[in-house]
Image (cartoon, rainbow, N blue to C red; front, side, top):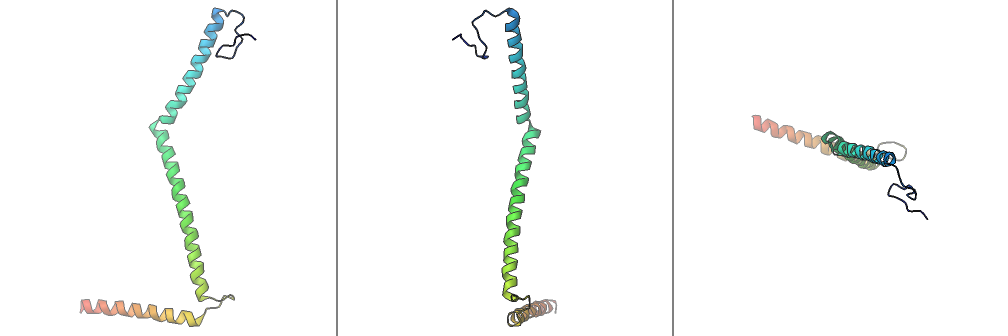
Length: 116
């Protein structure tokens, strides 16, 4: 088997100066492209854009989870006050409404006392 250089080419025949120079030029071009890519990856604008995208994705994920949780809570609360046919359960709605009215009246009385 013939010896193979790092470039993967057969090295059994002696190479000419032009071939060596062409290999060097090709290696130089590949190295320049690699350096350009690395420079782009570590550029502050690129890093900032990637960080912004990651944060946006995290916020959107958390917002989606919060929406699902809130929807579930609303549905559970609704199920307590509405029967399977969609009618209100008066035996549960009336006490809650009375508590709400009482709380409003209490707040109004406290405000009147503070002013008067």
